[in-house]
Length: 457
Image: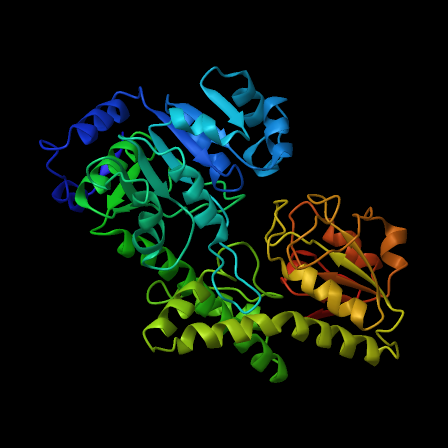
């Protein structure tokens, strides 16, 4: 049963003067409404599953025909969602996967789940949001609810999307309705999924908020409404800025304490014994994923519009962005101690996904590190059981495939560099046969009595 917060109840709108809203709310509440999902990636596909499992008819749209073809064949392309999802959707009469945008005309609610990357100068790239909004505007009809789920800066929903939609001559709050509800996906997390992660909802007006709540309360266990779309947009950024700043802090402390001969991992474990006033964050080779490396800079850019600087965010970004270079410098120093140069050194990278036990390489620091190693003349191989082939990325084109992790492969490399600590990796094998280990994740702490020299970087 969905829990709706007290704040949600206080925002309930007066529907008596809006026939379109009354009709839509009834359809949402009795689940006769059709929900359209624009973008079937890491956010859209889990939401499509959630809406489908809740009993709604779902139209899944994506401009990538290969995704549509795979879904219609019952083939999975996001492995962390399980192998049974695609066959289940393909066999269902309540799910349609299509690259034909006109199919969305039949949707009562349309959720935009599209990428919001950064441009070359760390400026927000809203092209996917704006293009999707224009597409929706081209088929907009009275009685539809449009919800943006992509992470963005405060004001995007009201100032960027709404004018495009109202160019149709239809009026928000009377003919159609607009809200913002940020995605909170965390691929690979076992204890939460889309349906159990609390949902924030903020509309551009009270009626839009209420309609979005009416939909999400049938999908999500807990729904929390806020007073505006801007509050919901800002809340999403705060969540990720909090993490980015704290990770930057421990990354900086790692480099400092290492020079003092102090193990940051032991320090964090010791500090974690305090039962209040402290939450552990862990260092690494750099930030990865779509959220933490990107989202904070949406607020940084917006702040400059009003003449403000976001010093904490920018400093955290600088610290975290330097970590791949720090890792490579530590690797070079370790090789030098063994009278080896980086040039022509054979480096085996362990793990290229941005976090353990998933196949997601978005913004993974592994890509930057591999390119830095290449620029120094190193020969690089990688092993990742979840990513058999390095996929093309927006800023990187790394033509490598995963090599098997065998005793001979480990021995043949001058250094093993652990970037992602997948649980399925045989760290004991690495600890026994590697000539040198650079461990950015404290993974080798799991191995009793490794014989290889280990540098924590």
